[in-house]
Length: 119
Ligand SMILES: [Mg+2]
Image 1 (cartoon, protein in one colour):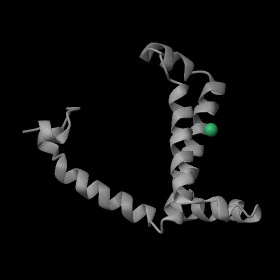
Image 2 (cartoon, protein in one colour):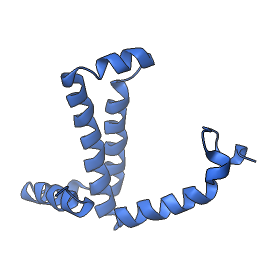
Image 3 (tube, rainbow, N blue to C red):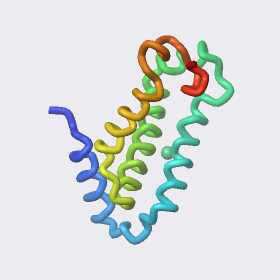
């Protein structure tokens, strides 16, 4: 059975609490950590062409590095959601509803334009 968001949050909080790191998990620091980890993820692709990225992603070691950085981002998201009393699945669901309103399928299908440009 796949992990749920609640499973991942429980595991992340257990990891944090075993180390008594909760006092350090202030929203500002978690938001900065999230940005730093997102930067580390972006660094793996920086200045590479689509072809270079596609070639790199055929290498299991590169895919493992990408997975590690994605996991770092996800962990910071989980910790930030916890520190701000955000129900992450509910927030994601609500945002999808908002985005569906901003990007109706009939107007947004196959387009990468911002919603203000959809007409
Ligand atoms: Mg990292």
